[in-house]
Image 1 (cartoon, rainbow, N blue to C red):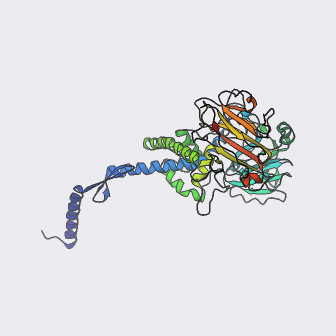
Image 2 (image 1 turned 45 degrees about the horizontal axis):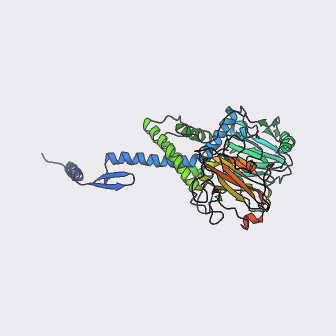
Image 3 (image 1 turned 180 degrees about the vertical axis):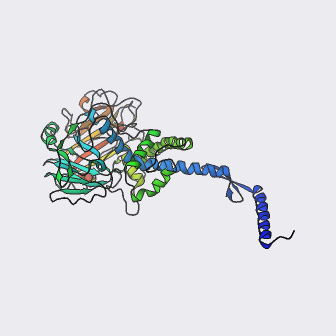
Length: 488
């Protein structure tokens, strides 16, 4: 039979393909890597290797997604608690005054009352926040905890009070004069203030009734909503573990507009079963990857936070470091801060320009340590001492608060006090004005008022806060030494 030119060409191609396949079968290359041994047949990955690498790629992307989601998951868990445990509707502010009310918050200040909420403004519509004149400071944050505006003494009202109008994304409302206008970049928005008066009870009594919210519709404000006390039932905004973490991520993806910088992450999540506009029903293979990634992602988050490889010691030769490692817009000159924001928001919630103040006598600064002088992790079964030199550079007050490592919340103890500060009644001061603070399971004789009780077997860390830090803080002419273990 005579073959046509086209048939001859096809026959030759088939023969070459067969020969090539046979040659590939005899030249398998094996390469050892950190993700296991990979096999290549004539340069092509084998089916087994390809399947393995796709799973590894999804797993790596899932651990990145875990780190990426930390700021938003912290807020959405708090919002869910506001709605479902305190039974407060979106837009209403909640007061957190007692330790029980604050106990679910990541590393809160023990001393100052919080007036906060997280609202979905795509459902409420524009919200008006009214602040009275007074000593308070706060912030308005998007779902990723980027600062959209400071409030109070460091905000545009400068502590004189005023009205803030928070508009949903894409709102075309032209607001009337007399409002500080905030165009939100996300549907879920955190806003609120902390009261900074030394007399906490008086501040709550005088200022809280004057702090209100209201819907803004048809060019006018609706009914004023007054502050609601938080429930003292157990609650937590600590990001959950396992598949619950990914359920929170899915809630965020479904409820929020996609930010331009997050489009790659949306693509990664798509292969893990989380896609905007679609139900989250992961396959068994996806579920296995997500469950493992939640474990490894959390371990990465801990290592990233406690190591803070991007942050030097604050006082040279000590283990104290800046607690807040991220900018208010989460951007550096040439990159967006991924590890830095994961670090801060893994152990804490909220940020403001005031919390990163560079101006003496204004705002706050937080310094953290997880280790003692010898570089060992702080643990609850040992007794430690912190010597606080005289003339702490804080115009308003200073404090040290103990948090448990697992939940990153205030340690719960028999004394009902996870904190010691300059405003504490009965605080024992040395003759030179310095203060010795003790941390441990039992009090040190003679320093019972200077002691914070810790729980044996549990890791802990502490923030040393400076409220209205003075020049000696910034030029480091005043220094704080390491915490020392004294029960060796």
